[in-house]
Image (cartoon, rainbow, N blue to C red):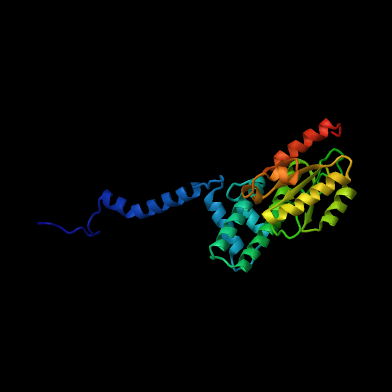
Length: 260
């Protein structure tokens, strides 16, 4: 005579395994997501977090967001050099595809600027009293509005040991006053639009005509990808996307002149 199991029918190990499959798949999916890397080398999960944080309708605390980013085992250098620019690019793409309004993109960009300022604490003015420091002037030409990219470059130069000033959308006369008064070792123009190249060309010409030993003159920004012959057109010393390249070029120039 068959007896019923008082604890109910027994379940095989295969049935237990079947129950665990959805959970295992979810864990594997989450781990894969954490390992996904963008073409620029950023971890996608951290990029997604920062994009959500800067785009949220709720308040934004740059100190807390910086702590969260560090929780992804990211260095401050990586946050400044890689993640902030990646999210800025993503915001631009969302605006171009009409998935985010200009106002929302502006707010998110200002939040990225606040995060950059928080991450850069301790860099500002760290080398101002060092007589051997390279003095750099980063210029966003009049009419340009990509202040975030220029701020990232300024932070990179400060980490390299530079004493950096920013000129945001100032007139050519104002830029020249800075160059004559401060005598920077390098002037880096950050340019996003081809239309701004004419103004940069005139400024470069004025600097070369007004200073006995002109500073290193460099050009960076997204305009590099959309125009040919920029170096010859503007008469800058180099066109580059790397703050380190400009810094290294300037260091060699100063050593050649006996200033280092």
